[in-house]
Image 1 (cartoon, helix red, strand yellow):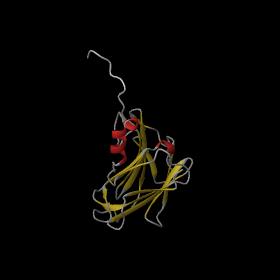
Image 2 (cartoon, one colour):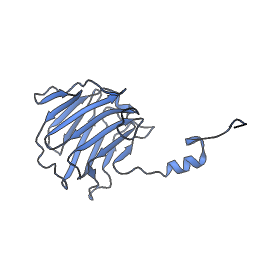
Image 3 (cartoon, one colour):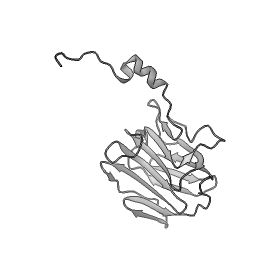
Image 4 (cartoon, one colour):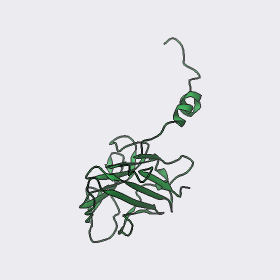
Length: 185
């Protein structure tokens, strides 16, 4: 090129981009944590859906819309099957050494927390609901109301979460969401 390029605007600096971005809607299995709010102690995440896969994967992400080996960070990832759950955090091309909940059925495997459980209703076509509570130093979650609470200590700050994604569920007709955020700050 013979000349310099000046005054090109992208993203929120460009009015046309701003209009296009403001009307963009994420699919129901992805939610953007608003830039002016963030997760911190007391925030709640509700996940509701119909099971469509034998593994349900919930990821809290920074600078990425899905887990990627080189792009972004996975601040918290919870994978649930009928038999067990694994939890971990991924950054700088590696799963970070976890601080697992200190209960007898928890083990550390492949730099992830692993625990055995029995969720007989985790079958394709069944309803699924999970509540995640953000605390200062850990995430707390339980499957179904009245279920056991499980814990995972933060490896990276909860306020860095930009996106939450869920795989393995489709929308339950009873709800207009798969992921719902409450008590953001």
